[in-house]
Image (cartoon, rainbow, N blue to C red; front, top):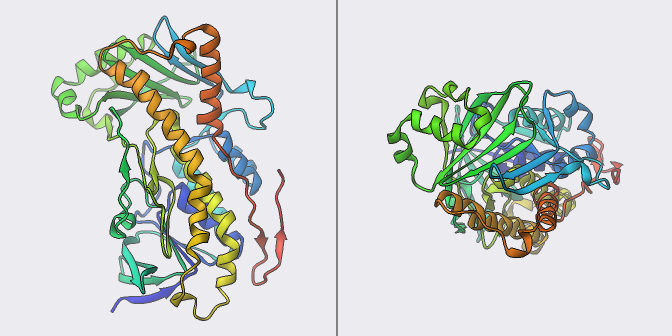
Length: 428
């Protein structure tokens, strides 16, 4: 028989959504266990564009000072267009009412390590590494926890609430029979690295050519490049060879032409199959999905990590107190947390999720699909004017970078061993 364990909230997935939710719940005195199937956080080309909405969350829990001590790059511009025709040219410094007017480019493993180190200050937090979630524990029509495997064998973890935060290919979501609706994406991505020189431009850039498109991300001493290819064409691109890929990139971004030779082996090219989907329902009795497990975002705008954090903040705000009260109930593992309370998380996050995905779909159809199909990217006529492009640029920055309905941390911080909050609110 698997070893039986208990917690109040079991979270599958040690990414931005799972770790943030675990931290906020433990900070509020809720016994929380996060399970991560890998032994570390060191995976390359993960989302690491930390937007102002996430920076504000980190500020509200007192972590911005520590984050500033991590090596990272601050970006303030977003430009997309052809050599002669800019489509989007946004300057984040124009948003003067916001405290944070930049994107922080921080390796995701550094951000997760910072969050975990802070979470471990709270006795209610537990992180299990090398813990592969196998599926939910179901009883009486509700999820009562999860089953997992680690190097010592298989285990059962009973919980009042179980959360799927294990990414776009969520094993827990699949085992629970929750199937997302595919919204479609016309492209896949090849991730590349090319050295950056002191005289290079800075910021985030998008380059559009006939039949091809690329985004460049300023990482300080190198460029992280997303080279977009038509959906399903990866094997054809490989068959054409590295020289053809280098030539296409050099033609698209001429300032990199003298450096594309650095891509001299296919093991320097990482392939990402792009998806765009969302669940119609994020919950079942006793189970909640958040982040990519609830809604996969395309790489457009680098929004995925930030929406995941926002989901986690909303879930903690809505559920921390009910979960904290449930800990005093001796029969808590045989009762189901009010499904209406859990469903409020989706209702809270539906507008930003659907709105952001709608913007991504418009960019896909109006710009990316046309560019990859060897056609001229087009915007609606009202946006083709200089004034229209300025309006579009600032609207894109507001929606994609600052987010729709950004969340504030409203959970209390409770002293260890007591129910008394240290801070009832946080600075706004």
